[in-house]
Image (cartoon, rainbow, N blue to C red):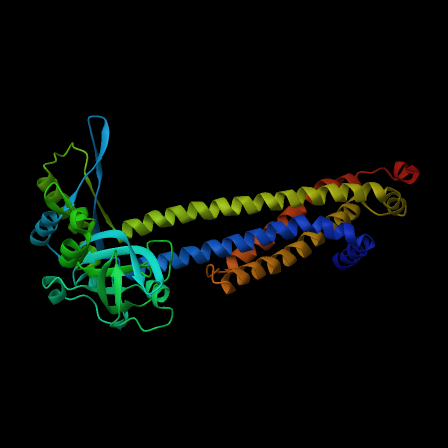
Length: 407
């Protein structure tokens, strides 16, 4: 019996019990759909966040205050404005460097209010972070030196406060202090991941003297939340990081054996760490979906064993008229493969639909890749073969005489 004839026989056998066949395929359909949908959502989220990180630039180096242990207690260290000045004077091969002090504050316009991160910084922060403006202008050196009460809003912040109105030139309140909106940043997306869309930017001196007050002073010194800088070239990033650590160690009186009370990292290091996290997450999601496929495979094997029992007399009759063991085994194996492949194709379509729905709902731009579809399809075929071998071999081993006597 050739392959096409076996497929026709398998399809007729499956059509006899349509509901049972559909329920048997359900496990494969759900498993394959889970593989396609979860991998697509994971790929889309990874691509989106990676694009945001790369959009800032691979040359960026950032210094954060850290924590250190003293007397068995973890103490939050300070990063000061004088640290920034020392870095400005001492670090070579840096194109721009910018200090930032940031705190969450409430912004209010009319009856609308929103809590966002307000960043007090200088004019070249726009260059360090590769920011683009949708309207207006960025804070300037004159704004900083004159302590002007001006603010640049993130795109989402502007939308939340003004609901379609043009923000430029309007006055808002930041913690009950009036500021004039002079610019709106272009949207970068990525809400919930430190997005610049949900932010507001004011001049550094204005933040120190007119808004944050004592919150920005510790032990008589102005403190910073971070210092960001751009290396002249990507090749200079490692050298810049070495210089920053050396200068900060000297300023904070740290020996080589002492625990650092600051953190220095580059965008490349952050991207590498993120890639490792997403790779682990992808494997985890794939494993969850794989378990669903295995459960579906067990269901197929269970139903095929029932089918072998029900068709025992048929198997005996076919063997009595000359059907060989391999022919019987091949027929039942074809049935399990057909079940798995139909379930696999249906699952791929369902998973693709789920991914499209997630993208259409603007939750995340799911990315269905060809290798994901191929992996899901071949995994479904493998499940059919693997879990179909035992029922098929059991059918093939039946004795013709005992099979014909089966009631």
